[in-house]
Amino acid sequence: MTTEQKSPARGPVVCAAEAPRSRERHGEKFDIERARLGPLIGAKQIGCGYAVVPPGKRGFPFHNHHVNEELFVILEGEGVYRYGSTEYPVRAGDVCAAPAGGAETAHQLINTGAGPLAYLMISTSHDAEILEYPDSGKFIAAHRHGAGGGYASAPFKVAGRRGDWIDYWDGE
Image (tube, rainbow, N blue to C red; front, side, top):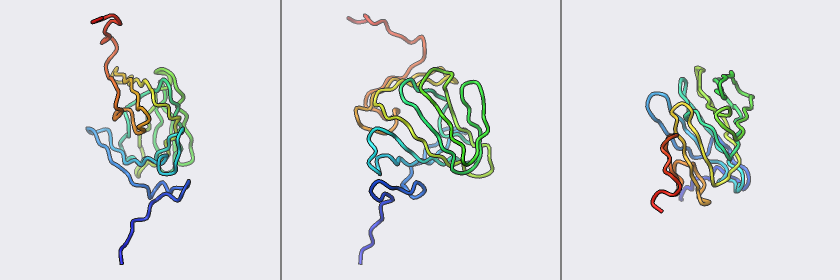
């Protein structure tokens, strides 16, 4: 008798806590386990992910999107939602908006609780995007070409800092 691994997706339904996750860590601040849920259930124009961040950590750098909007639904734990120049306490049941815009819409969730901070990440899913990182002064311009996934793994991307501009006519 062979045993088959059951898929966490049942057609258009998935149990977020049972979906396969990947873990990303960077330095002392960043640590996240996350699952891409949208592709598991067939979503095409909206992204959805499940994230779990350990105490004292954050999943992503403080950033803003110029094209896509995001929405976070806190499922478990407590933390701080850093949004623009303000910080908001969050807990299970809270919903946080991150509309497209400039630094005034930059956002980041930080786990300030004693246990895991688990949340859903829901977003529009446009392939082309420009992201800014106000804390480090970086930007990323990327296009995923329908590949899905994050912009860091996009097949076409450029990252830089303001002031690194090459003239439009350079080399022409």
